[in-house]
Length: 508
Ligand code: GLN
Image 1 (cartoon, rainbow, N blue to C red):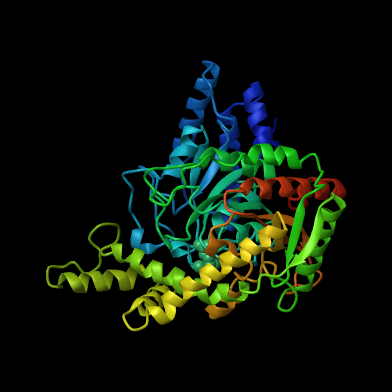
Image 2: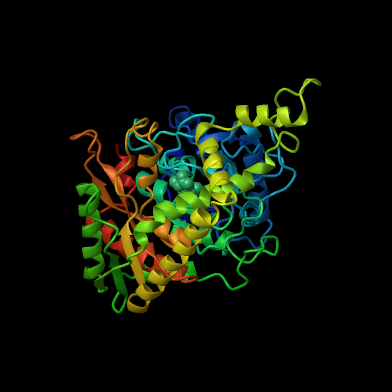
């Protein structure tokens, strides 16, 4: 099979061909490395590619297969890892200059599980510095371009993980979702992206942003691909104190069940507060068409009110910066990466201060200042304490909603991908883009984004239409519901357009 055909296959198809001996992992890996060479100067998905290491790993999988060893379902399939996952012997920067040149001595649990499953790591993907952002413009190294329109953001903070899958540089990738950073770039690049239940994917070896929210999650071009990766990396980890000691929901089986296209008996709630004013009309019409498809598949659709969802944005932008200000204290010029001004004259405090001044970007500094202020004595109760109480109100909204329905749906983002630079000087405008993804993050429930259609680009009428994502939220540890409903919807949409969603991009 020609390399140009290989890179367009789904991970599930690649896995089947690898298992049947039609193709080797070395061939598959080389095809993706070639695509990276061809497009990544333009797209900017990767911060670090290690072709030799990937090919050696692929050769080992091929040898194991030839020797008849038992292999996982994704063995030999390539993957990209967001540069927030600590990888032994491979540079890890979290998109920040402060970690430039740092090579970790250990491996994150999630990437270790990917390696143990035989996934072939192509490299580390670009991201907003310390996962702070919704556009990938906060990367200290380079921006990422949306494969659908190179002048548009890919979304963030896992922008490189999304653009890599959408530009066929890899069939699968991993990101982290703290307030939407898997779902939002998935929506803007036309992919499936999943934020699993908080605590069901280990944070061990994930460079911390906001510890009560950070959740590793998979990207794929199909619901089934995403489910296969989800199952490969999830599950209890004693190295993470908030890890849930319970069986991983059967997401692959749920995706398979959903693919039969019957949602009879499934109750879907449309969140009243996530839509309407402030949402682009193209986004709303693609979303509503998606909801109609759910009805056509047999689901019962009702409107559900979640009255406290509007407080998610201020609560998140107090909690996440507060936790970040504490987590980022470890970048002290002594333990990792950059050190500035250590000339024997300057004091330790001066070296720390010069290093943090030079090593952190503007958004990171903004959040450290905001967080340190919100946590300071005299203000703690008024800001951080109040924001934590909002989480309880949100949890009650979800509990009440899930007494009426099995899943909740909304648009994933209020807008399609906007022009690079459009909101760079207006952080509050950028934060508004997280409206729909924050409630599930603050409560820890699972949520998926999947592509439901294309909308006209309001910044370029008549130009390339851009992807719209539909979000599916489910109760804690009921991640399988997202996959069942997602697979059914994907199947119906693929059938109506006569091709998988990303084929629309492939033919451009
Ligand atoms: N966009 C949000 C922020 O800037 C979410 C980031 C994330 O999920 N890592 O904090």
